[in-house]
Amino acid sequence: MPTIHNPDLRRALAERLRYYNELGIYDFYRRSQPRASNLAMAEPDRDEPAPPPQPEQREEMPRKSAVIAKPASEHVFPVLRPKPEQNVADPVAALKLVREDLGECTRCKLHKQGRKQIVFGVGNPQADLMFVGEGPGADEDAQGEPFVGRAGQLLNNMIKAMGLRREEVYIANVVKCRPPGNRTPERDECDTCSPFLMRQIAVIKPKVIVALGAVAAKNLLAINAPMAELRGRFYDFMPTGARSNDPCWQGAKLAVTYHPAFLLRDPRQKGEAWKDLQMVMKYLGLKLAGKQE
Ligand code: SF4
Image (tube, rainbow, N blue to C red):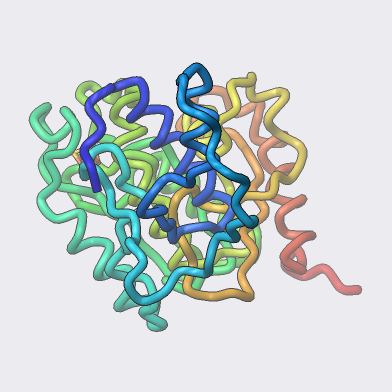
């Protein structure tokens, strides 16, 4: 495939391909020659007489010799490369492949800003419920597991209040390395890291994802709105650029609630967070402990 040098054209093409991927279209074919009619349209001022009318040329279904479009460069079309976990039915093995692909990642600047280790995610690889935060803090960085500090303790209590155990859900973050000083992860860091989160989601195939806090919500939903507008409803969610190997999984419902660290700072909002979790419980058919029908 010829290399495209014009950066605007490359960007536009990448956007268009991403759009097709989101529609579930992954394989692309290229015509080997432009059609005569297209050439005639491209050069209307030539003095030569117009060629005699041709019978309609139908585009044939691709044969074995058809050229399958390949990425012009790794950077421009990353979503087109088949992922190693695709077609791996066992979610444990598939998540392992995603983790191996992540490797000792240096893809964004967070790798050189004091991280001790990558915090990939933890929990049940077949969980119905998944929690997504924004990024690891100091405790998580030290232990290599998301939500293990004070905020993690509160998240555990929230999970318990839903009648579940931490081991039954899956917990991950938008970025997998600790931002220095617990700052908010920056846009480029989220954009670089979140494809791995999307792949985790595509493997786990949860029924519901709860975005913890505005950063997680905005990154997952690509919506820039205040928490008051984001909360209180479900969104249909399909991980961008990642293909599930299960045709029966049509994506997850996504709900937004407050980040546990925010609830530690402002405990008055715990009631609001509980309303969000009750909405999720209702959808998942979870009952309050001790409550009879
Ligand atoms: S935050 Fe993500 S993309 Fe950035 S270095 Fe860590 S693992 Fe890689």
